[in-house]
Length: 632
View 1: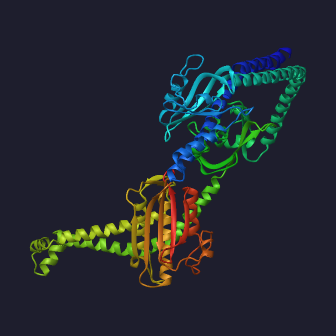
View 2: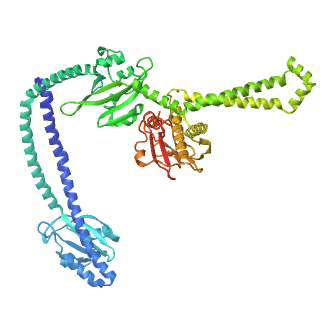
């Protein structure tokens, strides 16, 4: 324990004192000195700029014709001669021209009007020539030289002056500070800082003694806290073990420290197999390759957007994250999981680990899939059955009879020859006639068209069957056109509903990229909306029934699909409920109220997009679908 105190208490205190002293001597004092000199130089520069402003103001009076040049210069000299500043109000400004000739000096009036070209300071420096060179043509700058102390010619001291040229009059304006003043100020401040430093050192020494005296008590409390944390983790593990949802906990190093019974059941791995496993080893339980779970996002908040792409309906509230994902490694066919993860904190609000709870939602997903499939069958079942009855039987007759005709005009069978003889016909001549009139080719065309119609019917029936939920790249313009062709086959005699009579206007942007989606489900969404639009326009009546289909790319990596009709429209109060299950405005027997609610689910839940209805431009309804481009 003594060694720990020396290591954890005395050594840091001693290092801190040495660092503080070194910083004070090597950094603080030089900084203060440099900063003070810079401050003084900036001060005389600002004062010179104020006086320069006085000259400029009088020059404007001359320019405007309100004063003569001589009068303006005389007044300017008076004003600047009377300007004083500094602790004793004895610091001043002077003016000379670019000859150089002294224009005004409040303490050396004996030089006024004289040529000071060869006037040196006590060190032999021709300072006025230096002023002219520095401030020529309106420039400015600092000059070092030696000059008398304010109004006392018996004292000569180093000085730094700021000079600035006033080009309109050919004057040079200057003012300065004495180096001794700055050094005196620096010395005074240094003495104050040293005093403060000594006080701080005394306080630090006293605190060090106190810290050392408290070291043993702190070390004891630390050991007690560690034991308390161990007990707390044990209690947490006991509580987690009995949670109904599969739950596991990791520490800040992402090592598993708790793995409850529900987790054992869903994964088939016992707690003893997982405790202490290192970072992300637990992901292999769910996926065939290393992949982050929600619990890993807690430790990488800056990469949540990137890592969350693996999840459906990902949501973040504060530091709690949730989402759904498919785990192919669980069970024989994989399981759909809903997970929630959040951080764990100590008493100081530091993150010490994270916890994730997992719920198996496979049955819920299957129910949703069945609901979608049921609605698909409702929307097209009648059409498929009618086609099977109304088209398949006549098509079979057409194909069968066409094949019989081919047989009776193309083969020299005994029956064909006998019948031809009874009619006093030459069968070979008949064959020549049939061939010359291209009747076999026409029959081939009949058979080909009939078989193609049969294939179309078969495709319609295939559409009604359940498809696999596979994401694939799909061209939305092609998918929407296919749905439109399916809708055109819908005909209802009772409601006088014929989709082919509706005018369709297509406004597709070029170069629309393919979108990852479940093509069968998205086609079902399109078909539902198209059929609802046709139904609404039919109920309103009129001949100018029109559908406008638009596909465009939006900012933010979305594709926008619009299906707009010119029907009666949907009132605002109904638009708010249009996607609720079992809500319908159709007559009894005409609809279930599930079509749009399932379409909304397909777009928003399965594809991370949006579906809304807004008022159309021509008073009808406009259904707007937005699908993400990167929904992989």
